[in-house]
Image 1 (cartoon, rainbow, N blue to C red):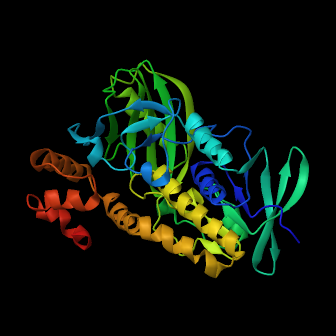
Image 2: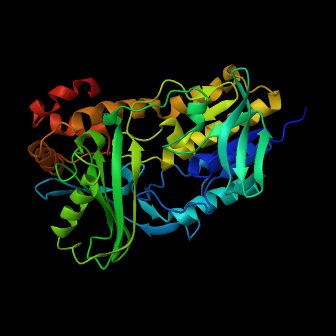
Image 3: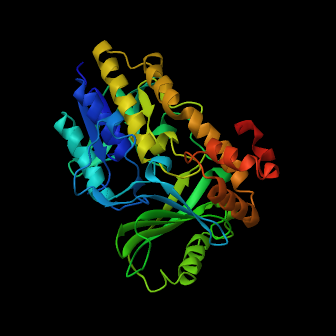
Amino acid sequence: MKRDYDIVIVGAGPAGSMTAKWAAKNGARVLMIEKRQEIGSPVRCGEGISRAWHDSVGLKLDKKSLAWEVKGAKLVAPNGTPFYLGEKMAGDEVGIVIDRVFFDKQLAREAIKAGADLQLKASATKLIKEGSKVVGVHVNSMDGPRDISCGCVVAADGFESQVGRWAGIDTSLAPRDITTCFQYRLTNIDIEHEYCEFVLGSKAPGGYIWIFPKNEDTANVGIGMQFTKLHEIADVKKHLDKFIQGDPRLRKGKPLELVSGAVSICAPIEKTIGDGVILVGDAARQIDPITGGGISNSCKSGKVAGEVLAKATQENDFSEKSLMRYENGWRNLIENQLYRNWLAKEKLVTLPDETFDKVIATLNDVGVEKMSTLAILKAIGDKYPELVKEFQEFL
């Protein structure tokens, strides 16, 4: 019996749309379903990305998606000392502040242009299986309930992914591997709008505070705190409010919107595939454990997933063995960095403010060629060898 689609993708964020684009572009019949009524809204993101990886996934930002451009990153020690990094040195979350409402729509539009179908206000409620093999998904939409048969279901349904759990893939998280986030979009503020700012130390226990400019007087001002550092869930907002009130640049600001949520900061999970199922992006825990950024990894992994699924369509083979090409592909791209950054995160959350102060002072003194865990540790190792003793596995 002919399938309804070759691929059904649950979720139309960056991971889902990028998977859809590259699968459809290479000949697969693709359906994306999105539970929300509008792609990209509500925004749950700091919205910072770099340009460095765009060409590798075939991305060219349109004018609406690009909200603001910056020169680089500004790291701020607990004592207030700043360290500036140019865009090319600052990693995958610095260089551009996007508008996710338009960015996500651009990616979905490109997927549709490549041949994918899209249905909004459509929620997956269960997987359809033959034995252990996934062969479709049950969907509730404005048109009523429907079973959709396919060769593979793609879980691109974010941090709270249900599809992965339904498929029996372990995506569970330890409390220390969850960051709780809260963000305002503040206007009427007086910021250094040429840099994305990251405030380190106890002002954001187990995480950091960010200020990502959207224009000269408006910015996303947010905080991420390790879940284990919270006494109660409201602590994350309290810490951010205290920071804002203590900063004369921000205290007169007024919020245009606020968002909250959680982000995984775990080591790479053991498995992201099964018979007839793939996990990608946040659902696959492909988030950078230090920065909490996931857009670049979602797009990179989505391209791999799309190309693998197109090949599986040509071969009519969606078995776990066939989909190992995706498992191997995304891990070759980003797994080492994810694991290294998870190990670094485990150490960084234990450091006192005095250590962060020394690190920033040292970076200002000796400089650093690239914003990476290895580069930073090498830069400070000569001056403060005692600071890097616990990080020897990185050197």
